[in-house]
Length: 136
Image (tube, rainbow, N blue to C red; front, side, top):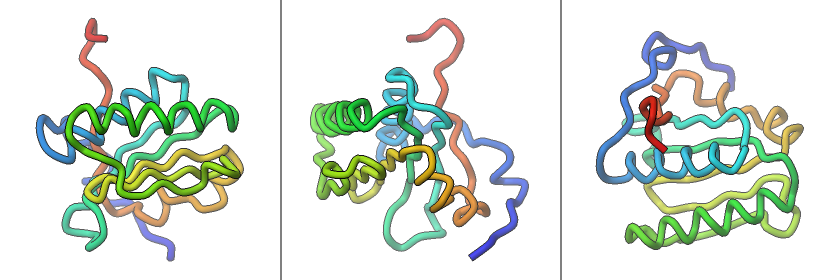
């Protein structure tokens, strides 16, 4: 399925302050802090009956991706969001952590481009997740 990006998808929404959006932003920031590339948060509310947010990132190695997946699960639990399902830890080419309202995808570079979730969900808004200047 090929979709065309609309103007909402091109103008990132402000970072979410509470709820699943806040968890998605927290996951994106953690991924970026751990040197993942091309970190992206997609707002699927009103577009998907399955989840509210996708967080997508490209890892640099299978070891890094496994470590980040473990850290994401730990951070989610600290804020009361336990992982419902984890897939892909064995191969570490596409690791998925499903928090129900938020699904985090950690891809190896070639695999990410092959599945191209950004294109599949090209018509959904993106969430601005980066920290304000000076915050860390």
